[in-house]
Image (cartoon, rainbow, N blue to C red; front, side):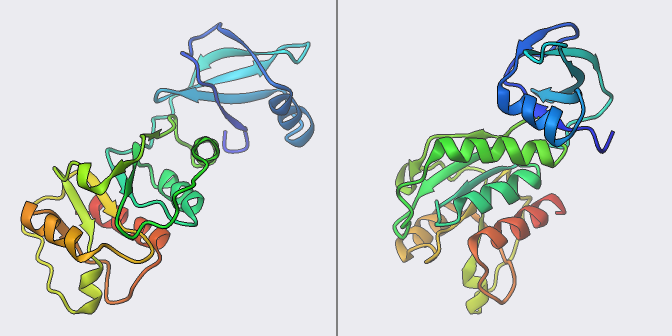
Length: 219
């Protein structure tokens, strides 16, 4: 099934259901992939499907035995200039939700979140997921719930000793291009947020995201 195109349908899927399909999907299936069948997915499940003879609908057929590869991680991140790359990479890593966090040094304040939703869908289709991660509304750092958070602590690259003496929570926090401010670190330290070292080099936020997710998944 690896060559069968995968399409996200924002619908409750069941055998025999028929859904209208846009011309962009018809063009993709008929003229790019040169086939009339596909896989459709949503809510953790995947089904075989075919285009109707008039190319106006998708008809859902039998359910596949493909399990969803999504995980339990919520990625909390300060929006950056390349937020699209960060979301794409993290979606491929299987995160279940994204929480934008506006920090003191956040400079990317005009993100097209509708475009970001499309990136999440495309990355989910490509990466063999059966679900699309949720994109939550942005919150300010001072209003952000630090419970269960593990922070990618760039202070480790400047010699700070980080000892992880407890199990990581399910929320990973990634800072902006300029890093967290002193007051933000003070608040996290006072709360007892669990830090994770990403090594002795300063990583770009999108790279730090992949490394942090890998560390939490492999704990």
